[in-house]
Image (cartoon, rainbow, N blue to C red):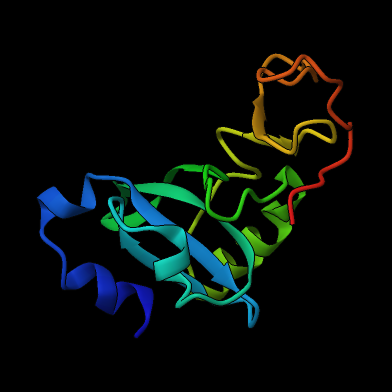
Length: 138
């Protein structure tokens, strides 16, 4: 189903809420209600990116208002934007030039806990271990 057809099947109220999204390995954008898990949205498969997206109406069409890589199921790196951009282009959706909110995920090498890095402070909140500068959440 194309994006315009998908959007037409939603109420105005539904479209004001953020959506869960994934970009599957074929580069296709998949959308689900925000309360949906990213892994379910992806059908349990691998993804090129995942996060949340919201839309606004502009010139009588929907465009991306905000988009993030916020997905604790997949923990995509910020460099996954290129896959998101291509998928949005393929769907004909106008979008910003990058994530409007970037989430930096790292796994602690000491305690193996998943961390969200805030304010470029690469220190594990669980054990105070140093977090890697490079994405390591597979």
